[in-house]
Image (cartoon, rainbow, N blue to C red; front, side, top):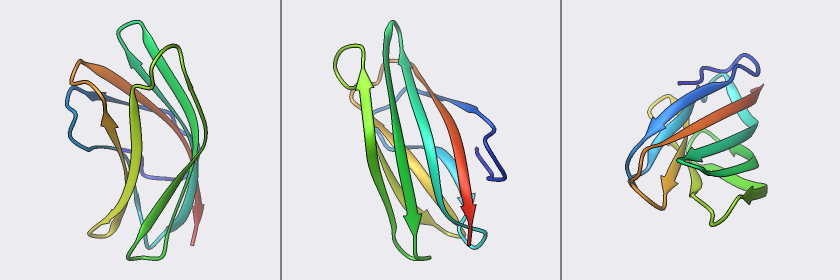
Length: 108
């Protein structure tokens, strides 16, 4: 999932309310990323712009803006897992969904 190096769009299938990784990059290579993340769940949609940064130990993500066609479908968190920076989606419902990520990572 992910891998950095530019804006390659990826889709991740999600069917759980547990935190699910939707974007992963090597934290030794990338310090931060700007991304657009879209959730499609049936005929409901959400899209937002997010910034994520880390110091090698702690990751922080902020939602710049987000909008949905109805209720918000999920929230995003970030963390360090081994040698990777990961962004997770936390869905409000376990119904099948797709998270589309359009990232723009920035090197260390």
